[in-house]
Length: 176
Image (tube, rainbow, N blue to C red; front, top):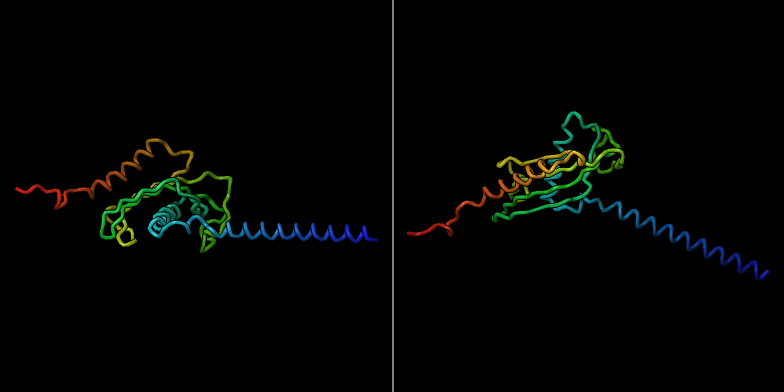
């Protein structure tokens, strides 16, 4: 009788331990899902991602929503007085939600049967708002189709935009 009571208590403890492990794993998974990579971006970089998503969603050939997946690289040039020049290369991943079916695509599940979209945006932001002049540069293409020439073109846009701000300053002018 004592042996069976011992075995019963031991079995209950194992089940309780497994249940606790399951609850902890669920809580960890839930907290990982709550940390959407988009939410980790600063507002200035979010605006660039939003611009790319907006252009992508207006394309006729795009049938599903995309979501921000990860940053590949980013650069920032502070021109002073609240003026920033930003370059952001990132990946967007297609979702299972068809365009027009949801008001918040971030709730859509990713799909793994389509390639990632590789995007680069380059723009001027003043006080956190994207400026229309110079024109923001947005380039998105399926990752397998991205070429070295396209990467060079992206880099050239960044250089051209940041070089244009490097003109003569009062301190650099020679006096008589």
